[in-house]
Image (cartoon, rainbow, N blue to C red; front, side):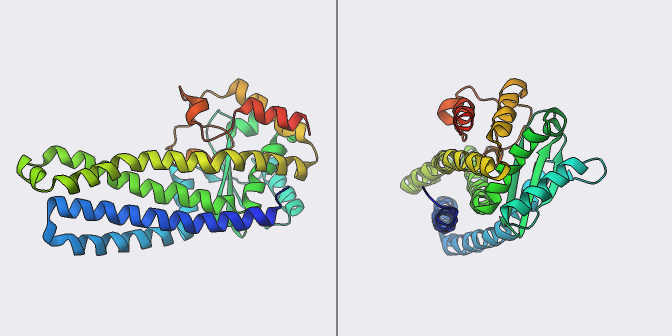
Length: 292
């Protein structure tokens, strides 16, 4: 069985690989755009793109959690209104041997939660009001334990980088694709090959986002479920919470696809949920927990 230390090491390696994957993609896209629109400015475009990419990495590392908390509408949890939630987070953090993360609340009737940050010393947990209102103590402990596990094994670092860095590539790709409508046919013919490269990168970037999400998220969720059961000593708590998620959630958490993998369950309804879901089937997760 893979240890937590192995998982931490793998996540750190994957974080570096992600950086080395995104930077060349971003720079190549900038180069293709420059060559298509103004070849004389290619070096300047590449320099600017490199600076933006490096800056974005630092922003993602140090401020990515704050960006994600803001775009999801999370607000700090305060006592006495959220005393139960805060106490659960503090208790399970002690059990996991990590500092207690900051606690946030998202005003939403669906049952959901996520963790973010760069390491256990700089982490946050956000829980929806739906989870606080609809889950009993054991169920809420199971959900919080799941998120504490993501923090302990450094899933949050890699997943935060995915959310922010890949999102940057997608934004640039979309801008490039939309700008093509305003180009003249003469420039298109002159730089046909470079245009095709730019188009390929712009089209493939969103697909790359989904492939990366699928590659990292499903295994991470199974591991966090098992770790939550280990922390709480009561796997049925999380299993029951997942059953309520399946029963009550209406997909009302409208968040970007880049942020969706952070949540304990799919925040949005999808027509092809099983094929393109960043989470394993909820029925399989419940089954595994019930068998523990």
